[in-house]
Amino acid sequence: MKIRLILRRETWVLTLHGWSILLFFIITLFSLSFTNLNSFLSLNSPVPADILVVEGWIPDDAIVLSIREFKKGNYRQIITTGGPVDRGFYLAQYKNFANLAAATCVKLGIETDKVIPVPSDNVIKNRTFASALALQDYIAQKQLNVKGINLYSYGPHTRRSWLIFQEVFKAKIPLGAIASIPTSYDQKNWWKSSEGFRVVIGEALAYLYVKVINWKA
Image (cartoon, rainbow, N blue to C red):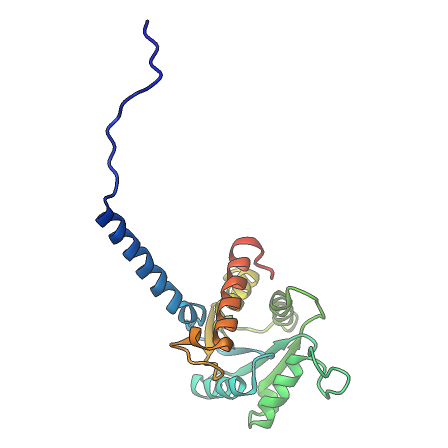
């Protein structure tokens, strides 16, 4: 019996032109994914809803836009969420973002009985998860008959918040998402400014962390 240590096989390999074409497609795919990253994260997928949930930490200009959405969407209630303010706590009249956002909505013309602040616990991490839990507990305690919820958040943070809220509510209530438009950077060319690059890349990494490692983040 012969023992063979070497076997000759015929293989196919890419030529220089083949590698060039493959590299071109890889670069093109990466460029398209990179430039559309902000659009992907800034999820806009509303559902028929009677409740608009506004994340209370979003900037004032985003609060203004959420009020416009409330008026045109014929919602019956705004619910604001959020934990303790992370700056000026000892000087601020409102100690958490839920109450701060609710007071802002009232100041901007929304009737007091249509705005409900639902503060969350003071946590070091998992703040969005804490807000989602607080909202879920509030709806259960008050036995609210909710037809649907649209979550209003800040630009590229929206998809991550929506994912976490979805995991908490587990499809018991239809849950959509609406992303405000940040004014601090150009949405189409976000990578051309330090603010846009910092926000979008940071939110992309945070979304991957939530999606792959820990959705309670």
